[in-house]
View (cartoon, rainbow, N blue to C red):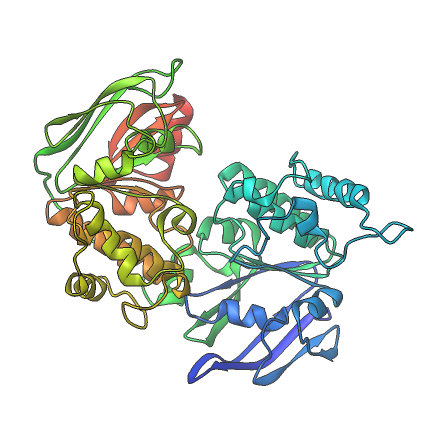
Length: 497
């Protein structure tokens, strides 16, 4: 079988940093090829070279046996290489159709843009992904998941033979992931080559047939996934087994710090109660969209529940919590909220690391009070959390996903919060950074803090947490100790409800 793409001894440096060091990669037609490694391993750089974003310092690229070189992503697309980058590239002030046809707009016989054709073809492309979005909708009005699907539709619509998907499912729920996987399989069956970059093990083993692992810009190896297990793949990536990623649990919890009684998410849901104690990490598990996020966001005023009582450190919390000032109100009570989408809802990407951390300290101060400097506190937090950045003045948007997540957590650790409410603690984070974040959360709990967390990764909840509440149809249907729980136990509880 002739390789569609053969990258040989590719090297690329940025300043004095060698990002990719003599890496070779072959892509076969009719295959889905996983590209894995920790953040900074060189995955995205290697794919941006293939996509024409960067030019290599050394090595060669051959397509269908002929040597190629691209000066721009447009040239790569014309040659049949379509890329959906991890950083969404849609223009928020344009419509979906205008984004889909940006730079290649069809024209009428009068020389004007043919919006009717653009909208019709966009509607068809979105429909193939099961989307009913209006092509004339502004991208700014879309959710992050919808934006991701538009990106993917843009790539799939291109008449390409190679598709590069860089973290395509980071913002998608389980149902959306399956829709995407169905189309990836269709592309594979049509003889296309797909490069799939993801940190989610279940997706890698569900959709890919081959895996290449990079570490520190070098090639570790390429293997058929049929010969691998999640544990052996993790060991290949970081040199550690799966169980070594999670810190040990503490044996006993302290006093109750968060109590929820007779809580009802909506008028039709069954009331439930739960509690979290000092020293505990407690999970909200279950199938996607069963009420876990609604409950967590109800506590900070981002969702209005039907009723119930909430007690934090012995003091009642009036429901519903105000939408505008709810998060600030909870911070004053010692509760920090870490949203799933750190870029849109958590961080100020254009500001330095020090400002993103210190803002949590300012939020606890009284209004109109004098802002104080917190350089020493920020420096201590960055050091204790091993935030990799060019100092506190580094713009947080320039950091890797794992380091951005540490900065967001560091905001609340610096402010000495007692309780952390966390959505998807390691979304879009590599294996090594995941292990560090697990350690930070366990250390927070060991010092008397409490964590209530939800995650789409069941293995993460089992390994990280002390107790698990299974949520189904907007209510708690089961409670179990995490140490003895299995994925089967959680799924069985959710499906048997």
